[in-house]
Length: 73
Image (cartoon, rainbow, N blue to C red; front, side):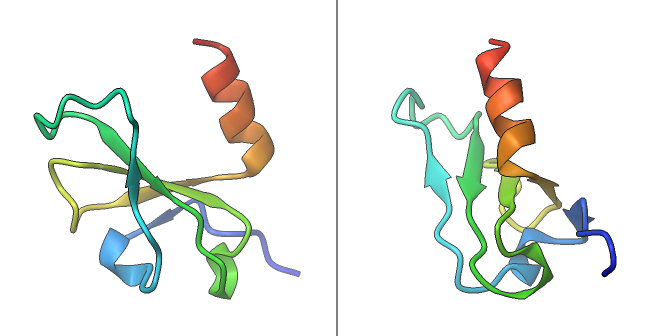
């Protein structure tokens, strides 16, 4: 089995995902958005993108890595 991807060229390569913004966001478009792809090679990972650049790259994290990252702050 090949390793899961760590990023995608463009977040538009993740069709049919629902991007979510934190409830702490001020609406000034200066935050990150997250999505959980449910199909394809990214299924089960958490996608993160910059809300200012919705067509830009997305980083992909395992659920465990993301939980560790958010727990650190």
